[in-house]
Image 1 (tube, rainbow, N blue to C red):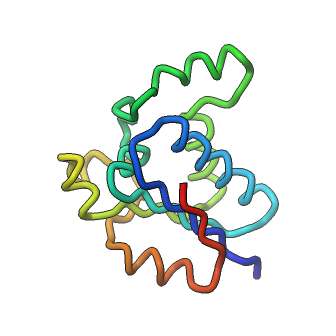
Image 2 (cartoon, rainbow, N blue to C red):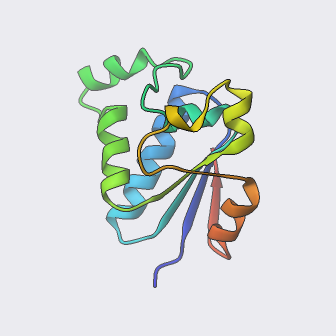
Image 3 (tube, rainbow, N blue to C red):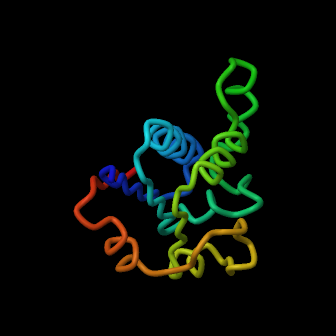
Length: 125
């Protein structure tokens, strides 16, 4: 079994969220297991409507330059089997509820994320 890569996204920055998805997709593509935790305002990256991320308009620029879009990366991460977790208190802080999340995202606390990370590598973005 491969070592888990546990990624925690702590804020609502589009560039950070995009990079977190790049890291997740890369790890999954080489056979690593990924646990992705949207904490704090980072929960917005796991919402169906992610355009609330600060700087989300940069997605169009990335696409023009031949870089994978946010949607493309996020879809790949889901399809490749990442475990997607959203912070319960982060949802409250963002003024959102679980209905705003993409299908397949589990709402939990930080302890669940840490349990799932186990002795794997934790990457904070």
